[in-house]
Amino acid sequence: MAGLIREESIAEVREKARIDEVVGEHVSLRNAGGGSMKGLCPFHDEKSPSFHVTPSRGFFHCFGCQAGGDVIKFVMDIDALSFAEAVERLADKYGVQLRREEGDVREDRPRGPQRNRLIEAHRVAQQFYAEQLATPDALVARQFLGERGFDQSAAETFGVGFAPRDGDALFKHLRQKAFSEEELVAGGLVAVGRSAYDRFRGRLLWPIRDASGDTIGFGARRIFDDDRIDAKYLNTSETPIYKKSQVLYGIDLARKDMARSSQAVVVEGYTDVMACHLAGVTTAVATCGTAFGDEHARVLRRFMHDHEEFRGEVIFAFDGDAAGQKAALRTFGGDQNFVSQTYVAVEPDGLDPCDLRIKQGDAAVRELVARRVPLYRFVLSNVVGKYDLDRADSRVDALREGARLVSSIRDRSKVDAFARELAGMVGIDIEQARAEVRRATNRGPTKPDQRGSRRGEPQPEQPAERAPRTPVPDLRDPRFALERETLKLVIQHPMAIGRTTSDIGPDDFTHPVYRAVWGLVAAAGGPVAGSGDAQWAGRLRDAATDPLVSSTISALGVEPILSAKEPDAAYVSMHVFRLLELTAMRRIADVKSKLQRTNPVENAAEYNRMFGELAALEQHRRTLRERAVGSTT
Image 1: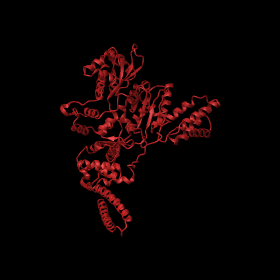
Image 2: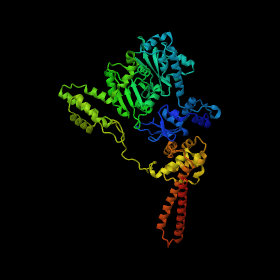
Image 3: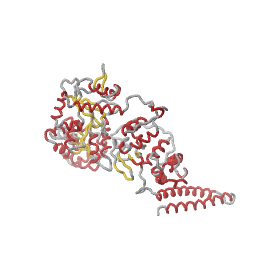
Image 4: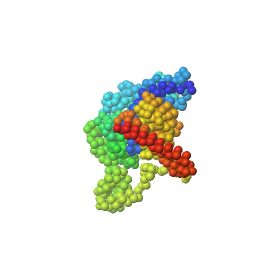
């Protein structure tokens, strides 16, 4: 087909686009041993990290949801792109000149602007806005920043800019840079009425960047009284590159320190993020015109190592007014999203981090975060505070509502401590509070779903009958451990295993999936064909037609070898000979069974033949055992 990207160009993209670097833009990775790295999967929600990346082989695999593949497959899945689009994006990022078949004619693609064009348009727009901040027309914008303690250096650090009051200044600028009207409208930079006009006009602008630092949208604040749009803040609408439920302002600046400290500070606005970072709280982020939700929590968890093996803390800095308290209560509803402890940092005088920095300095912002209190305790105080505790009936109501809250605490070891706090707040005996908490626990607002759903989420209806199917044995069943380890060697170290596997055949693998993997290896020319081939595992995976086989290859490509050191010839030989020995033992068992069922008088010839075969198989088995043992000495 004309326009197809040549294989050598695809191979060059795979070679230059380091998978740990590409994945690292979405997930914080830590060393897992054996040349592997791991983190929380970006494709499903999990509390323990099961997502592995092996840079030396260019593979990723999640042992939780079974997603896996190479760097191109990761970009396809994470950004919902076609194969060609993913290759093109990586080529643009890593400076690979793509060559195509038949005169470099581009293949057909879905309609709509390419992502890289929208990203580039936003980059140019951000640069334009930043330059406009220095113009005379932006005096009010500069005064706004100055009054809040942000100088020119701060504006440059955060990329703050100014949108001219002209209706089409940015539009004309971008059209001169060869961007089409379609691209600018799709990216949310331009709107169309009687004619095209700038989406943001006469406003102070903050570029909203993704974790890799690419500008994907803008937040615009009203600074002129005659602004025809009353809303104080105007944010980019949903676009192909901007999803507000998944975007956190400041994540590009905070992500490294979040990963290092396993801490995240969530504030409410752009200036609060700026104030926190300038004051030394460099893990601060904010949502962009929407409440903090489940998708935001997933983004934080991936970057701050929020899992059972390494717990951190998430601190929500809310305003001290009624709206802030309401936000805290709403956030408590999603507290189960985190493994880490959740906290609230509220300034007693109701100041947000930006105002606090203006009035009391950087140290006060750091102290605000240091004075954090557990989210449960903050919410419990707000719940009890609603009632007139001088009245007996109100104390009962406060106790019941507080007990329901305490009973929902994720960390059961803290339930008794919070029951004590509840008793002290309401002014009752501790045993009375404990009894009410037990009743609330037994009643429960919802029953936990056996599959792990949160807070009584409705489950899909199950079909009345399921079509019968033959169950596939568990790939990690100990019975197949030797098959799995041998195939890991074949995929990860084809040069080391070389021709040692020349005696191996499909019958040496009893698990149907492992047998299918070996079939692909044999069809590709055997392990020797993978020696020196950096794309060996990828070629095997691409050849698989069964999704389970494909997923298994990616898993075998990233799972660490059981050897504590680089596998040598002895380690390889041990596994090959033991695998062959198991096959011999199965054959011996089959022959013994037939021998027992054969009459030695009526079928003397067949009986003697099988007896001789059994003796030969026993000798073969002993030889394999000796070679396996000898390879380890």
